Length: 286
Image (cartoon, rainbow, N blue to C red; front, side):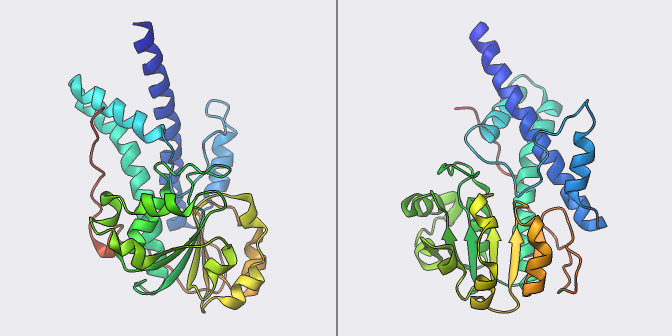
């Protein structure tokens, strides 16, 4: 009984943390539509002592080995105990995480003139968070999938994740659509971020590695195709927006409209090429 209680405590704690991330990500979509800044909203929320500031960082979604697994286990338990409304509530945490990933991928496609077929896109970061080589349930995997589904040519750089791991993750049937050959056709893993960005239409920051703040973006801009886009999925370049715009970049970020003379972004239906986004399948507890 004590062991079961400990397991429940751990799963519930991770579910609540995942819920906070999905909640702030839902607000990020609202901020992009209204012109607000989700960072300012999160700061105001975090000042409320009843809530606190932890796990209110908007991004392209949570990953790792625990959050999704524990939330889905909670969904499974609620369904097994005939609590469908409770199961549906927690399933929404997963659905929102998936929505945020799809929404970001669709934003990339829309900004690149509604097609990425044959276009080179640099993905910076593949681990689910910085300072680790762990890629389990990394949002980078799913962003890569949605862009591959549209025929984009991905050049991926991560300072810790091995090439073999990246290829393995993207070759899984659920990601490669049972066509692992397309990974070899569309994906190149590089050991240099500048090489990844060479002749790219866009660079996409998928992991909040500190080194991405220190890159020579003027050098990168000169070697990219124009117009050159930056899609910051982790809000790591906020302090550089003015500098990046003066260089010539078109900047898109999570939960904020970067005001400048830029190619306009119009939100589209979330899902690869206007398809309705299906919620992820519910996974039974193993």
